Image (cartoon, rainbow over all chains, first blue to last red; front, side, top):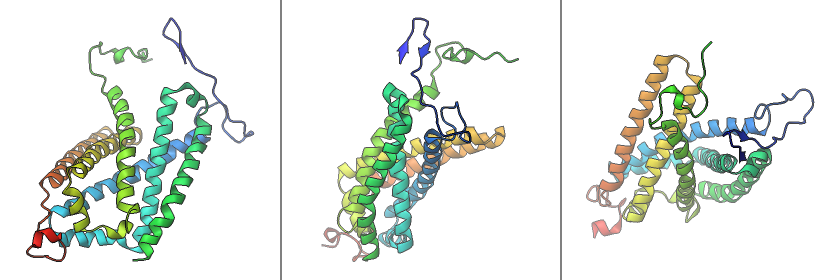
Length: 144
Length: 147
């Protein structure tokens, strides 16, 4: 971006949706990748926040007794919770990569212009990371 | 018609005040980058090494918390993540809660729960006793405690 003498910021041209009449046109966010990255960032952030509250409390049991800690942590080692952990890690990985995308959009003009492409890069990195995590995690969950 | 102050004019309150929203914006980005390193490392060590989630027990965590490196790792994660999360929830409260009293009550709950959990978690990490309960549960604790 270039800052002109009056302090006004000249924004770079923005990709506009070309999806036919049903897609809302002329907006930066509504209905396209920008909106979905925003929605997913909020949903994953909220889910991670409430897990964090529980996780601090369950870890605090390490200070109570070995028996209390092992009892609660064994709840995380069941098949159902093992699948829940895939969802949790999926939420964390998306929030992490999309957060980096947001930072790049904020500070780097190229990323601002190509924010829709960058959403799909985030999705691609998420798929690769989850393909590396999920099989190994599920083997650990289901073989014990 | 209400006059809207020009951007960056300090909201008409006259300069010099700390711009807390700006520092919140910076905090979300700085802590976010650090949290990617801390949480990805946390997940890798706890879920991908050894037997993954199945290896986690009192003994496993006691072994980690005996090391100042993991103590500081966990405390940094606790502070950065909980404040990052609470500030994110504040954004949602501002966006979706329109009744002022409910909004204020939720923000007080956010500050209170964040402060309580940060104090609790920090005390747990730094006052942790790896030989806790060695007399009652000798099978569950590290072998050095019963020797």
